[in-house]
Image (cartoon, rainbow, N blue to C red; front, side, top):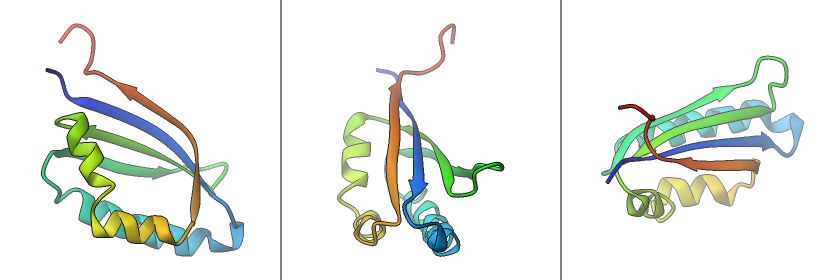
Length: 97
Protein backbone atom coordinates (compact mmCIF):
# COMPACT_ATOMS: atom_id res chain seq x y z
CA UNK A 1 0.00 0.00 0.00
CA UNK A 2 1.28 3.47 -0.86
CA UNK A 3 1.57 6.34 1.56
CA UNK A 4 -1.20 8.90 1.95
CA UNK A 5 -0.27 12.33 0.62
CA UNK A 6 -2.34 15.35 1.63
CA UNK A 7 -2.40 18.91 0.39
CA UNK A 8 -4.68 21.29 2.27
CA UNK A 9 -5.35 24.99 2.11
CA UNK A 10 -6.25 26.88 5.25
CA UNK A 11 -6.95 30.53 5.93
CA UNK A 12 -6.82 32.62 9.10
CA UNK A 13 -10.40 33.65 9.88
CA UNK A 14 -9.43 36.90 11.64
CA UNK A 15 -6.60 38.75 9.87
CA UNK A 16 -5.61 40.44 13.12
CA UNK A 17 -4.58 36.97 14.38
CA UNK A 18 -2.19 35.99 11.55
CA UNK A 19 0.88 36.30 13.76
CA UNK A 20 -0.75 34.34 16.56
CA UNK A 21 -1.95 31.68 14.15
CA UNK A 22 1.49 31.40 12.55
CA UNK A 23 3.07 30.78 15.96
CA UNK A 24 0.46 28.13 16.76
CA UNK A 25 1.01 26.49 13.37
CA UNK A 26 4.77 26.34 14.02
CA UNK A 27 4.05 24.52 17.27
CA UNK A 28 1.65 22.18 15.46
CA UNK A 29 4.39 21.29 12.96
CA UNK A 30 6.99 20.73 15.69
CA UNK A 31 4.70 18.28 17.50
CA UNK A 32 3.15 16.58 14.46
CA UNK A 33 6.47 15.54 12.91
CA UNK A 34 7.10 13.47 16.06
CA UNK A 35 3.93 11.42 15.59
CA UNK A 36 4.14 7.75 14.59
CA UNK A 37 3.21 7.43 10.93
CA UNK A 38 4.08 11.02 10.01
CA UNK A 39 6.60 11.10 7.17
CA UNK A 40 6.30 14.80 6.32
CA UNK A 41 4.27 17.69 7.71
CA UNK A 42 5.04 21.14 6.34
CA UNK A 43 3.08 24.37 6.37
CA UNK A 44 3.87 27.18 3.93
CA UNK A 45 2.59 30.74 4.12
CA UNK A 46 1.42 32.39 0.90
CA UNK A 47 3.45 35.42 -0.14
CA UNK A 48 0.66 37.49 -1.72
CA UNK A 49 -2.00 36.53 0.84
CA UNK A 50 -0.24 36.03 4.21
CA UNK A 51 -3.45 34.92 5.90
CA UNK A 52 -3.41 31.76 3.72
CA UNK A 53 -1.31 28.65 4.27
CA UNK A 54 -0.79 25.37 2.42
CA UNK A 55 -0.14 22.12 4.28
CA UNK A 56 1.89 19.35 2.64
CA UNK A 57 1.66 16.08 4.47
CA UNK A 58 2.73 12.48 3.94
CA UNK A 59 1.39 9.78 6.24
CA UNK A 60 2.24 6.08 6.31
CA UNK A 61 -1.47 5.19 6.32
CA UNK A 62 -4.90 6.82 6.46
CA UNK A 63 -5.10 5.53 10.04
CA UNK A 64 -1.98 7.57 10.92
CA UNK A 65 -3.77 10.69 9.72
CA UNK A 66 -6.90 9.77 11.69
CA UNK A 67 -4.80 9.39 14.85
CA UNK A 68 -3.24 12.81 14.19
CA UNK A 69 -6.62 14.39 14.90
CA UNK A 70 -6.75 12.58 18.27
CA UNK A 71 -3.44 14.07 19.46
CA UNK A 72 -3.47 16.68 22.24
CA UNK A 73 -1.50 19.23 20.18
CA UNK A 74 -3.91 18.92 17.25
CA UNK A 75 -6.99 19.21 19.45
CA UNK A 76 -5.40 22.22 21.18
CA UNK A 77 -4.66 23.97 17.86
CA UNK A 78 -8.16 23.32 16.51
CA UNK A 79 -9.79 24.56 19.74
CA UNK A 80 -8.59 28.11 19.03
CA UNK A 81 -10.36 28.36 15.65
CA UNK A 82 -7.47 30.28 14.10
CA UNK A 83 -8.10 28.92 10.63
CA UNK A 84 -10.73 27.45 8.38
CA UNK A 85 -10.11 24.79 5.76
CA UNK A 86 -10.51 25.91 2.14
CA UNK A 87 -9.69 22.54 0.56
CA UNK A 88 -8.25 19.11 1.26
CA UNK A 89 -6.76 16.85 -1.42
CA UNK A 90 -5.82 13.25 -0.58
CA UNK A 91 -3.52 11.48 -3.01
CA UNK A 92 -1.38 8.40 -3.42
CA UNK A 93 2.35 8.54 -4.16
CA UNK A 94 3.83 9.79 -7.43
CA UNK A 95 2.95 8.05 -10.65
CA UNK A 96 5.90 6.24 -12.18
CA UNK A 97 7.71 5.47 -8.94
